[in-house]
View 1 (spheres, chains in turn green, blue, cyan, yellow):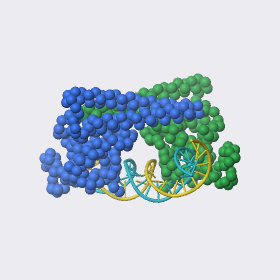
View 2 (view 1 turned 45 degrees about the vertical axis):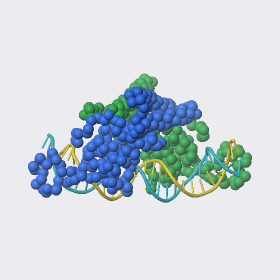
View 3 (view 1 turned 90 degrees about the horizontal axis):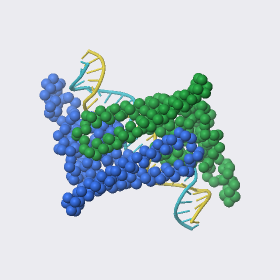
View 4 (view 1 turned 60 degrees about the vertical axis):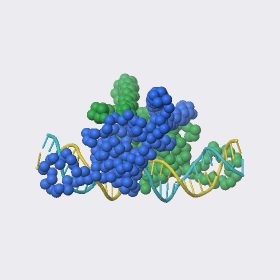
Amino acid sequence: MSRRSGVLEFAVLGLLRESPMHGYELRKRLNTSLGVFRAFSYGSLYPCLKALVQRGWLVEEPSAQPEEQLNPRAQAGSLAGRRAKIVYRLTAEGKEHFEDLLSQTGPDTWEDEHFGVRFAFFGQTSRDVRMRVLEGRRSRLEERLAKMRASLARTRERLDDYTLELQRHGMESVEREVRWLTELIESERKGSERAGQESTRRPARETGSDRPSSGPSDNTDR
Amino acid sequence: MSRRSGVLEFAVLGLLRESPMHGYELRKRLNTSLGVFRAFSYGSLYPCLKALVQRGWLVEEPSAQPEEQLNPRAQAGSLAGRRAKIVYRLTAEGKEHFEDLLSQTGPDTWEDEHFGVRFAFFGQTSRDVRMRVLEGRRSRLEERLAKMRASLARTRERLDDYTLELQRHGMESVEREVRWLTELIESERKGSERAGQESTRRPARETGSDRPSSGPSDNTDR
DNA sequence: GTTAGCATGTAAGGAGTTACATGATTTT
DNA sequence: AAAATCATGTAACTCCTTACATGCTAAC
């Protein structure tokens, strides 16, 4: 009933933080920007939006259609007509809540389902948290590799070629992801050191705006 | 209520086809042999087993505990006691049904959730079907790549570094899987040609036992 | 003037998980 | 005799999808 998910909720808050949007647009962003990893349908998006509104993290704005009003043919039907295109905007509480979520580094943040979306919003995440999430993810994967190697050693001879190939390919993928994470961690560390030289010591604040940001978000639409 | 899944059902039938097992053992196999890709809990396994029994694809065998009966202390409580360890065995109908499933090459067989488990049982799958599944999977991934490239071209400049890196890494993974599939398809084709030379033309039967098999399964337990 | 795409929703259901409950057997 | 691990199960819940229902607007 409550439709408060994990991933979807997180992603919606994160995208709306960048700029207000209506559901349809939001869904497209969800399935391209955060691409590959997950795809959501309206059947989960709209109920999720309603739930977030109820908890006071979003507000619905009936949308006065600023630029599309320019089109003169449209307003013939009815002035307020045109099936209200509901634009959702993050409230102050919503923003606060999202920042809470961003600062979390618990075990599930580096599980498969969550890691992708966490990474997608690393631009808004503090360096400490980024590091913990990356390192957590890496050691999670290394654990998994160890288990796979052990189980492979135990069962190698009674598996047929295809099963074996599947395991091999699976392990290789995990190994590759570990290397990727290692590179990312390295480059975070370098960035950290450079920042350390600049200001001699780390700034005290943990959360939020130590990101250089990609400019003030003036892109309301495509 | 019915608990007839897709992947889980398929995997259970496939593993039980190799040899009868009880639930606990089955679950371990599920989470190692078919490794990386999925993990199942008892909460889904046992109801699934019940459902498969109801449909006549499995039978429960109360398990006379052949070797464990040797242990003399156990039978004190009650002769039929000792919390029946239920061994599940595939029926003739179950086997037939599984072979039907094996021969399917519909669109969902190459989707993410299904492909892994399909591949895991390629040892029992006919060469034609293997080819169709591999090629279907590859073109599915190529489609996805095309979409990703298009969306990346459209949105590159308004994405921050992390989102961009996530996309890049995602695409690279997909590209690697495509290359892997291409190699597999190549090697299937070679095998096919060699088989063609041996018998001049392809054998008529499509399903089942053209596998060399990994020996008669005499391994009931670890 | 009809197809395609934009836009918003709901009801039912599928595929699984978590947490709980129980008890036997093996290892320490 | 305590702890681990084997073994089986159920109820409630989660998170998402499919299929449906509706209507507007743009393009062909």
